Length: 123
Image 1 (cartoon, one colour):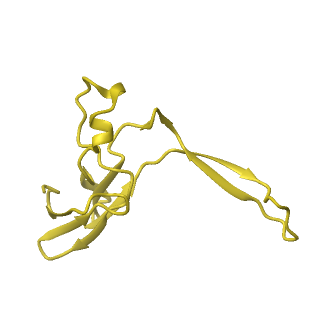
Image 2 (cartoon, rainbow, N blue to C red):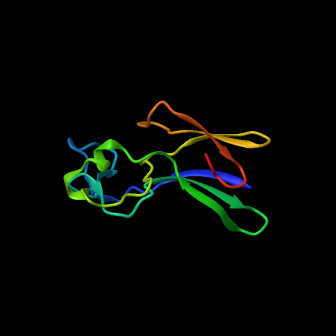
């Protein structure tokens, strides 16, 4: 089994010539996250932990890497929407032991360390 922290962050990228111009020819990339009023345009989870079975090449389990942030739970556009646990747009820091998977929320997350069952992902 391999455990992977990942996130989904749609971004519009554009190439721009450097300002001021330089002797070396290169172009810089600038990105902007794609949201509607601060809400990502893709379905959650926006950050996740995935357990991949290396023998079969299949996903054994996948869970959101964090609870739903307050800015989404209380967002006016999402009032009345039953949000699942969304995770956050960050890659969880993972530590594997004999029986547990420890996960930190990563940069921008809460100072939380969770212990997961390696077989099920259950917290």
